[in-house]
Length: 361
Ligand SMILES: [Zn+2]
Image (cartoon, rainbow, N blue to C red; front, side, top):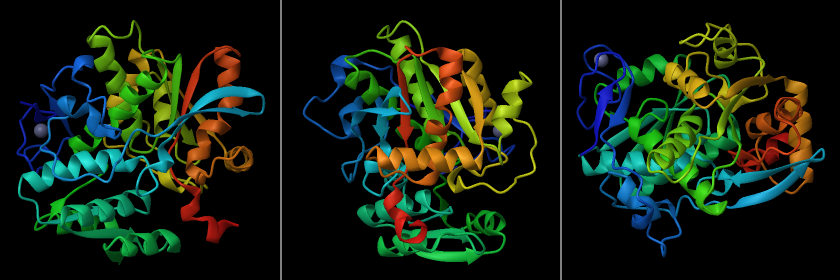
């Protein structure tokens, strides 16, 4: 039976906890079932084909997961694009939200809350609706994008606009269930399925490298842990090199990695067009850095100009991604320099550009 354990003091947390009640450390799941290829439900074309490896009581689904792995070529560089933006609410977050809310609903959660500037809030509202729970999303009053607020409301979520939304959501977590995309360990569990799908879609192989945008690093850690489970099961020989890409404005992981540190660097956030990864203190920063070292990976930063140029190129190639998703494509020239032309790359296209197209075009 899986349980959530504190990364700092080792305490075992209760089912609805979002962080350690003793020391406020982050939680991760221990005693997860090993990956078993024979347990894949071949006839299920959602992430629940891996239900045997997801220790949650499944109550509802919107068909999340099993996103396409499409061949792509940008600026002469070939790669596989994992089309995470085709998930039900338009972002990769649906994998984590589905696992997390099924778990929380089965353990008696009623009203769920999160703080988000966009994708996580829309995902929570969509899945709360599917689960019959009420959702409230705290958004930053100054910077939340209008179209993303409309999307949260359209899914039936309530919005609280706040000037100090982190403090407000922590206070509200005293009486509601904090279904945090950054903190909840079941959210990261759901993200592991992206690795397992990629492995299946490549003909049961691992690629040479996986690139994701990194804010709190949920998808990044999901890919890493998913591939690690495959290696533990003897289904791949070695891990793909995990490559974390951040915007030049907010790059605590890049600076931490360059210093070979165990903890992310302290940074002063600057302006960035990559609004989905403006995280100066990632909840699992130590785990992200550990994944980089363990997989012989690296961390790269991309500036605003390169991100916007990459987004235009990706749109022109037929993939309607949001700006944050373009950081990985913006890093391709640096990747080619490091890994050469023949490396097999998987890039996560994380969020849908349709959410913002009326604002940005
Ligand atoms: Zn603790």
